[in-house]
Length: 153
Image 1 (cartoon, helix red, strand yellow):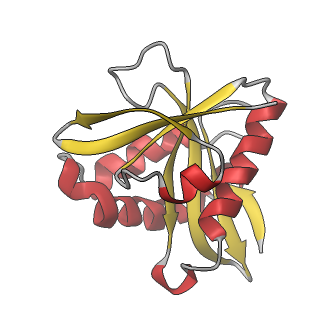
Image 2: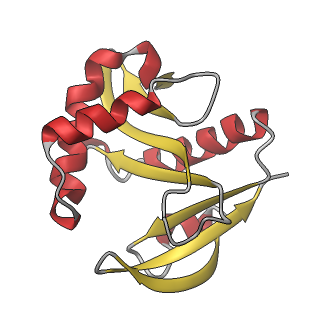
């Protein structure tokens, strides 16, 4: 398994857009076209926002991104991990954890001091295990989420 920037494999943008629509489309007025357009912002390797793909034998198994201000209610929290998605056949193999750790490594290269994220798993799930500490639980856009932070060293 290897990590590749979406910028290096933009042909996978429609597939990722479909994943996001299937997974989170019910939470917004998202469409496949809107998702693809939004993903164009993540076609970077040397700056945030960016997206990584977890790949094996030219098969994309999952994705995750680094972005700015994912939750509009937290303008003081700059850097965020989001869009962590693993295709069902590859779940349970610690792929999501590996992607988040890779994003942490990349964020450190950009001198990011802390990462934030939101999760619908109010226990924190894998993010708690990776050291993301809960700041609070809020209802954001009609969904209860745990807002978490991890300081990078």
